[in-house]
Image 1 (cartoon, rainbow, N blue to C red):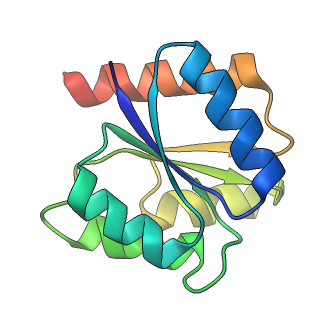
Image 2 (image 1 turned 135 degrees about the horizontal axis):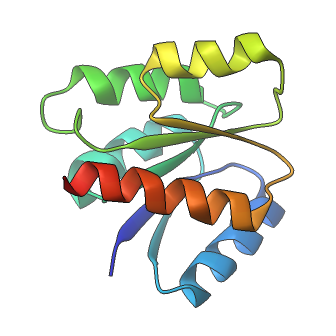
Length: 124
């Protein structure tokens, strides 16, 4: 069962995504800010991180850069989840080290497809 770390500060988004992903067979761990996300990525070694970009304490951009710069976590794929939908935001997320980019509100079928694609690529 793939383990996903969901880093999301909005309770409604956290609850909705964690319930839906759990129903689909994923083991979900949750962090509510970027600092906790970094800590849980280091201690829990998830298969994938879903990273909100607008987070308190440390934003998702910096948290992703930190994880990708650390040899212990650099290989964990990160999919950005953001309400920022400009094309430059996608480039900014990819430049920070994200392996994928999904806009909010989340379209679950599209997110599931992105998760499967990234996990398949990480396993090869």
